[in-house]
Structures are given as C-alpha cells and as structure tokens.
Image (cartoon, rainbow, N blue to C red; front, side, top):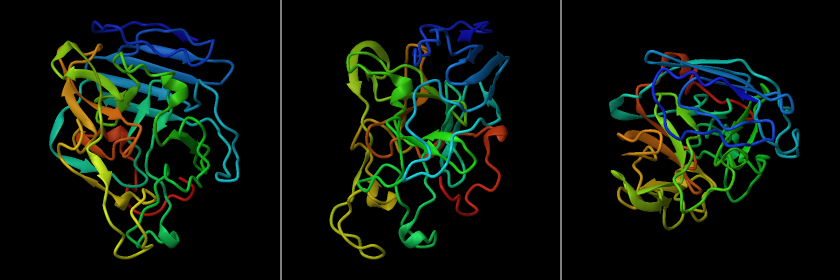
Length: 295
C-alpha cells in the first residue's frame, strides 16, 4: 500500500492511480512510500529541501505481460534504484539529446521511462538506422503497458504506461506520472488548452514530430513507415509540444506553472531530449558509448 505523506511543501491534487487494489491514492508531489505485497513493488520518496530522493526496486504495481516471451527473452527482477533529483527542474540553455544507455525518467511507481532500444538495421549501430521499440513490426516483445525487460531484469516503459495511467479522459488533465532525470514532472497527453488558464478546457497535447515523406535514400530503403527513429522529423508548430515533447504550463500540481514533459500516443512516445540539467545521480555511466543488448 501507499503510506505516509509528509510533505515539506504544499501540494494539490496529486494522486497515485490505483493500479492495483492494494494501492491507495495519496499525494505524490511530496514524500510517500509504496509497499505492494501482491506485485512486490517497493518505493520510498523523500522530499527534503530542494531534493526529491527516490529509492525503488523497479517492480511495477500493476499487471504485466508474460516475460520471457518470443520477442523478449528476459525475466523481470527487482532492481536497486537510488536517485536524488532536483525538486524543481532548471531549464538549460540548450536541449540535450540523450543516447543509450541513458533512461529518461522514473514513474511514480518506481519503473523507469526508457524509450531507446538497442536495435539497429542489420544489427549494426553504425548503420545510422535505429529500430523503434514501438513500430509497425512489433518484434520487441512489449506488453500492453508498452514495456518490456532488459537482460538485467529491469522492467521499463517505452511508451504510455497504461497500467499506471488507467483510462485517460479527454475531458480531464492528465495525472502526474513521474519525473524526468532533470527533475521536471512528466504528464500524459491531455492538458489545459491555454497553458496559463486551468479554466480553458482540455486539449490533446500533440507531438510536433511527423513521418518524413518519400522513401529512405539508403540503409534499409523503402518508405518511411516508423520502423526507425530516423523515419521521423521535428517540425516546429506541427503540434502543441516542443522538440523535447514538453511545454510550460500550469497543471493541477503546479498552479503557478512549470515546464513539464508529455507522453504521447505517437512518436516520440517518451521524450528523447532533456530540457534541463540532469541530476548527477541519474546520469547513466557509459551513456552513448555503445549498444545495450536487449533494451
């Protein structure tokens, strides 16, 4: 169950979705703990001063698909996550695109948001063509939560974590789903139409990425169909979100406004850039230095 909500700062309306019957709703912008005997989920979040300290075993508090499976040979096992994130993110002068094996963030249940897959055209990371985990081929063994398992046993989300979000309503602001490695909050899909007005109605916060037109000039050839990351291009203003799949807006938990990221139902699903300065504890050693098999 979720226990203890001793918050050093006032919070409003931030509740953990009741992903399993043993999980009780509680404030998640402050300190809280999850102990779920059914799923094995263990998570402790402590807010102190300007730091959000997260300790989690990475086991989700919702039903998962079967692992191993034909597309993913790995078995879920407990991890040992320890992150100290800034309570409030700070925008950097430039966006930072992250690379394997760097994850993006951590959900309110202690599962990582980790969108990148260690799969390439002809299994060659130098090919310039990176296979998307959520693509038309659907070969990487994802479950209904758009998640699967690394060789380490780490269960992680490549897209919308449906078991955590529950049914998102197009008439209500998204719940708070977690935090990026730079401390900024993570939401999903639905937000206020006017970023500064909570009474302006709800809009689908669309991505500004789109499929390229035409056919690939090299590598695998064929039409751009979303199989590869490079099939997509960012077009400013095409949607409502920026290149990091985020925007500055008021939210139920941040009535004065905050930059925040948005998970979308289409590419990039989970953001591929950091807008702020990533906490040292969240930086994955060796990020971008080579493949991570089975990601």
